[in-house]
Each structure stands twice: as structure tokens, then as C-alpha cells.
Amino acid sequence: MRKNYVLDTNVLIENPLCIRTLRNGAENTIIIPYTVLQELDGLKRDPRVSHLVSQILSVLLADSDIHYLPPRGSDETLATNDDRIIEEIKASGIPQPILVTNDRLLQLKARVHAIVCEGYRDSNPFRSESQSYTGFVAEDEPPLPNSFSWVNGYPVLHAASGPRVIDYQHTVWTVRPRSVYQNLALELMLDQDIPLVTIQSEAGYGKTFLALAAALVLTLERKDTPYRKIFLVKPVIEIGTKLGYLPGDIEEKMAPYVRYVQDLLLKLHEARPANRIYQDAEAGNFRLNPKRFEILPIGFIRGMNVENAVVIIDEMQNLSRSETRALLTRMGENVKCICLGDTRQVDNPYLNEANNGLNWTVKMLKGQPGYAHIVLKGDRSRGPITDMVLRTGL
Image (cartoon, rainbow, N blue to C red):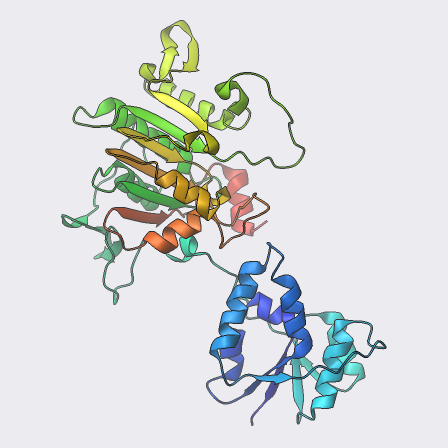
């Protein structure tokens, strides 16, 4: 029996592809009230969900089989959008409409008006390009440059020089990877034929620690390396109460924002001395040597021409597309650029999960011969508390 589904806004937001599921081929009819379009119009300016609204509108515009209910006019007696949706359904004359909504109050109002109502629980949370493209391709897909695939239980890197089976484990500045994905990330970071690498993961999976270890190897250990210096570039986004004006030079101003970098460098130094990145490590002076390691806010790299260096861009999800373009176009000859971030943790109030530097980089550069991307995952991370948070989805 053909069903007539009327969709509420929250269902579309929860899963923009729900239309395809509910239609079930051509079996059922999908109907959108005019009030839902008005709600979407208001939400498109909300940076928290604007990327979802964009997805919904693309689906709606591409589907000519969707039916739309006209507005009921300017009836001021209808106090809420819920009331308007119900009146639009009642006035439409649709036989046996089924209102699909997860709004429990609207479900109760629909019951009062004898409108059949159902919830929708087939959630499909939005995943950015940097999340959905994990760096691996399926068995039936042609491999992208520098992508991975599984062959006989081993990951294979489809490098420019030919497929390479990764059946070995890296040890980088005494650091051993905790998972196969960390090992593959190191493979990409240490490959001098791949100048640009992006790494996506939630907090606690060792992105920055691995990148710093790889940078030390590339600049201090390898004798044939063209890299002479390490830059760490970071957007300065404050969470919570702002610190206000900070005195001192650039390194002192950046110190509160990059304390974790200093701690990770000291951890690596204690495991294996990296004296050359410090001004005088033997005398206990662990201030960075600007000739070998420099931490810069994003604004200071504009106008620079970076050459013969390893550049780590941390928290790239907090950069805009224009900032990312300005930054990456500063990269000159003999540069290894490692970009880190998590598009689910955007702190910049003007960006969102889709509209940020990391996601734009993956979206636009995927398939380029000098570029690679990987998503870190697995059970082990920073520690047991982080593991619990990630496992429970807090």
C-alpha cells in the first residue's frame, strides 16, 4: 500500500538522505510542508547546521518527485511552526498522511488532530570529506594516488613508484606506533615523494606526537634530507574565557597555546636527545632554537617563502578555506607539509564541520599525485579516560 510521508525539519536535519529511504524506490510519496522550507531558510545562516541545510537543499533540488504543500497564508492564530505544519497537512486533502517527526510535542499535537505520526530513527550523522575518505579504497574501486587498500590482510600503499606492501613497523625517534593506522601515517609522513599529507582523527590518537617525531627524523637524522628546519603553524582560537593581551615576543605570546607542543618535544628529547632544536639543551635551556624549530601563528607566515623545511599545520580545522590557500601557497621547494586536525572539533565560530581548511584540502586535493590522507582510528589513544570518552561518544 502506497504511503504518503510528510517530513518535518528535524528528520531532514538528522539524515538528509532519509527521503530515499522513506520513498523505498517509487513505492511511497514524499511531501514537504512549506513551513519546513521556511525553517530551513532560517537555519541556513546558523554556522552549526548550515552545512546540513546545504546538503538537504541539494537533495531537494535534485529530486523532482517530491511534493510540496503550499502555505496557509498569514493566519496569526497559528502560534508556532508546528501548528502551521499541521494546518498545511489538514488543508492539503492528502489521503492518510503520515507525519514523520522526532519532535515529541508535534507528535502529541498531531494525535489531537487525528494525524498519524511516526518517528524516524535511521540516523546518518554528517561526515566531512576528511572523515569519509579514510585513505583506503574499496576492493572494487581503482586506487587513488597514495591511497591504501587491503591485500591478503596487509595494507598496500599505491605510491607513484608502484604498489608497496607495508608489512613492517616503523620506529621513529624511539616512537613505535600503537596501531596499524599510526604506522601508515608514519609511512606517509616519512615519504619524501609525498610533499603534502593530511591526518584526521579525534583527540588522543597521537597526531601531533607522531608528526613531531617524523619531523625530527626528517630534519636531524636523515643525511640525504633537504630539510633544515621545522615550522609548526597553528591558528590561535581561544576556548572559553579569553586570555586577553599577552606580553613578550612571539614565542612568549604563543606559549599558552602551544604548551602541549613543548611537552611533546621534551618527551621526545628525553627518549632520544634532540639538542639541535634547543638553544642550549645541555645547560638546561630548552628554549627553541629559531634556526631549527619555530612556532608561528597563522598570520605570521603570510608573505613568507618557506623552503627546505618540514611544516606541521596543527588544528587545520580551525582555518578558513582562504587562510588554508594563503598558507599552502607559501610552500616552496623541498617542503614536507603535514596537516593535522579533526573536523568534528571546530572551535572557530565562523566555520563548521564541512567549511574548514582541513575538509577543503581533502575535498579538493584527493587524487593528486603529491598528496595523501589518512584517518587514524583504533582502540588505544591518549589514555584510559580518553578511551572511555571516545568509546561512549560523550
